[in-house]
Length: 106
Image 1: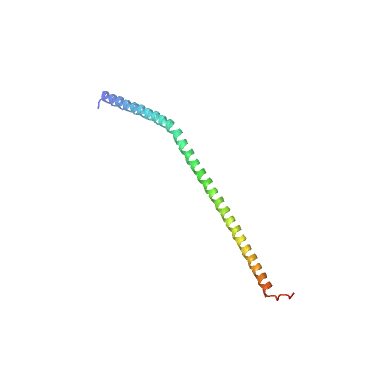
Image 2: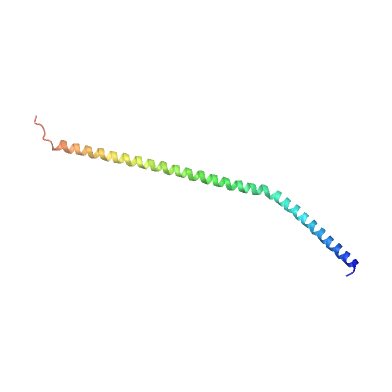
């Protein structure tokens, strides 16, 4: 290979490397533009996910609160029914005792 050919090959390689560097720079610029466009959308997407998680947690907490209130109400009603049953049984027993006593003659 002659020195002239070597210089030509060197120039061609240098030109290709420069062209490659230019393409890399353009691609990097495009990626920066794409990132700048998508960054707000990505941020909004993450905010939406966080909001959905917050709403779900609030709904679960509300459901648990309502379930606890319903359970407490059911227990109170059951307790009231049991107390009423006991009172009714006591009254029935008292009436039974009164009915079995001999009546006083007038």
